[in-house]
Image 1 (cartoon, rainbow, N blue to C red):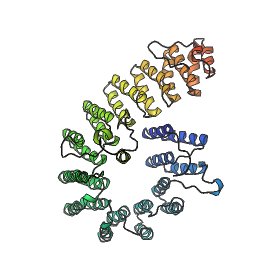
Image 2: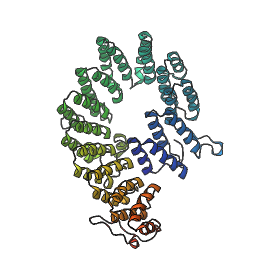
Image 3: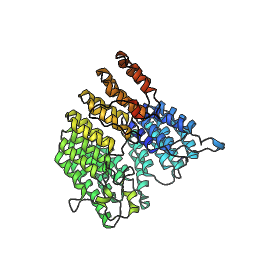
Image 4: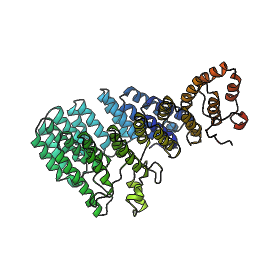
Length: 532
């Protein structure tokens, strides 16, 4: 990671929220302004925005942003010292060149990355390089690169080659050579071998050769106790995809049992993760087995003596089942699981006797012990808001929207805030929107001008000038910027009522002036912001 002061946590959270809401241009704009204004270059923010652009297929933007971040790094060329770009950024750029049909450009970037941000075994880079070359039908080049840079069999790299031999040129014999070479090094405890089994199973299932596919599944079962959850999930996903529910359930049970045996050895390792549960839960929902899906999800808490004890469900797992329940119209069940996510304290509930040094290894990095939001994140609330609006349960929207804004440390983006406010206004609840905006400046993060712009536009249309003055007064008091568009919106209704001097005086009022001196009457029922 490049040295230097990291970005403020609130800025990082804001960028994450914008990306989650699909507002990539806003995330880029804010990040550019932040870097230009502060001179702080934070790798995590760079990587987040680059990856979001890549996932959205905006490859030209990825290349432009990479150059921008490179130029804006104040440390990179200082004193002729080359400070490396992050490995993740290089990986995104390599993937981008492959995606745009320029594999040789990707190889050029790889040569630079080897020097600028080296990886001792090149495993991360070579995974991308071989995958990209195989996708470009350059199998021989992928083999050559592997021979040059991979000393020992790497499961991910070899899997890419095996996939190329099987799916691209249908050469099972060559694939078997690499497969056998990989298995010959099992004494090294390679934990990602399962992806190779999944590749073979997929190949045979596609061609209706079920017997061969299940033979690889049986071979995998003899090795699965040495696999990570992410690796086993690959095989589980293939079984589910091709309707092998019996085998999928068997594998799922085996993964649970493997984790229990690890517990008996006082290990903190386990054989499942949230994605494992998501695969099984989603399959049960697809088949209409909602009761079975709920039982499977709820039983992970250890209510059964044989159930796993050490697994910690994260926000992805909670969000997945809550979204499924909302899609099925089971809002009451979704609320129960949502409440569980809010109350969930994995350290206290699941590990009362665990030494503190292990907590960071067991609990997701974004989780804050004793946080009011528990395992829920902004996406969890967003899922419920959409469901409540669909059911016209506006009071519940208000309850949890206020909870999100004022009782948690989560940072919803202005896109989500505007979305909720606009839907409240559309349902005649503008007073509630005013109340929320009146309290928002008390948060650590100031609300965006667009949030006020949305509500003030409706207030001006309705001629509610008292409420307009109240909100504008808050904006001035808490230094929320007045956009040119908002200024033009505000001037017109006051000009019509011969009060233009009032709004002009308010907007030009020095921030340091006493808020009470403005003599703005607060609308009835609203809480005035404190005056310092």
